[in-house]
Image (cartoon, rainbow, N blue to C red; front, side, top):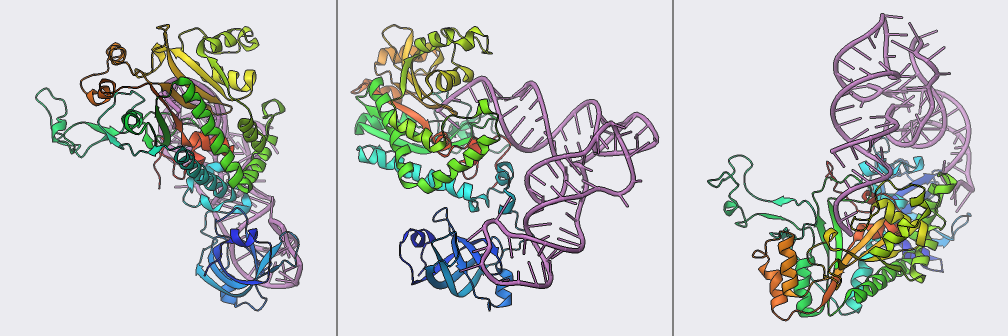
Length: 475
RNA sequence: UCCUCCUUAGCUCAGUUGGUUAGAGCACAUGACUGUUAAUCAUGGGGUCCCCCGUUCAAGUCGGGGAGGGGGAGCCA
């Protein structure tokens, strides 16, 4: 029976028999194996006898998988509390060191590791990142489950492109050559698998709203697809999104929920992945040292996470945000590239200023002008703004986008017409407003962006196992 | 998609004004050592200087085009 390395390292005693299995991280002095099984960041040191068979000795190379029967004893060397004194050792899978592309001692760059994403899990950094990613995913389900939310699976393949959240990937079984055409030359989707044009989902929100009209509180947590040609460290073509939707909530309840939610999952990761986060914090600190003084962040990773947990997010309206920006030293010194005026969307540089320079904490911006937001957002009484909210996080930018939804049928239909959204095709969505409509609100949170924030990583391609980006779908 | 920077050994990088046989550290191989902790020491093998075209007596180095990657921007989560 295999004992996990995490269990051995967590125990306080010694002098017991174990079997450990894992992958060799280093082999020193023909005697000391650093063995890792992914259960935790740390390795167990396996000490093998000087009489070990030559053939086995040759096969203990970096990356090889082995099984060891032995005894956990108090370490005779410094650097670890316990070690496994091997009685017998079996090579499970050899690893030719000349061909193995992962050389840990060379501190390979993140860019290089991205090219060997199938092997990068075996590094400390990516081991830590993906254990934290797992913990955050679990914490998300736990948060909502503990509050009585129903986890709702919204469709991956959808016919609706009404939200206009972005370019969509087409789903089809039609042949590229000899595509069936209508008389006017357009593609005849009646011949397609679903008998209509279909795409990969860009959001589960509209369907989640349908669920909220029955269960009161629901959430989705699934893959989402955007065919935007976005080449940034913050965008993926395939990413995971969390979208809670709550009946009877207004925009203020929505803000409270989002804030509680973010605090909870950060706290859960701090509590359950401290070792991994400490490692990532140290990694980040070393990276910061390379930067010039004025670009370094004031807080370390752990301090940043604790700060977010312990401080209320700043809440301002879009109009107040514009006033702050117009009144800022940066504006007066003409530091902003883009124009600041009421009615224009906030640019990255503006968001960064508000979050990183002015407030130095996460900021929730509400009441955006209706013309820069989606059709389903609830019109405020001023007739100019909608009940939208964006949460802006330091270093990441927009991490949450949400709103109170327009529950009044006439107002919703009016907005859809103004924005040229076909109301007939959306009958199922409008039915919620026809049959027992209630005020409700929800938001979307990009999972990889919160993983970025918690791990302190800076490129989104490093926090999803196999990133899908323009011109890149390896593995 | 736009701006900008980069691409030299398996990895990380140096390479002077365009000039002889392109270097280092690590990795790897062989040997030594055997309580190591990024082990150490000695020896050794390893190159399509991203690709194509051009300038030149001569190109890793200069020019043009292309590909891939990084950072920033737009779109957004």
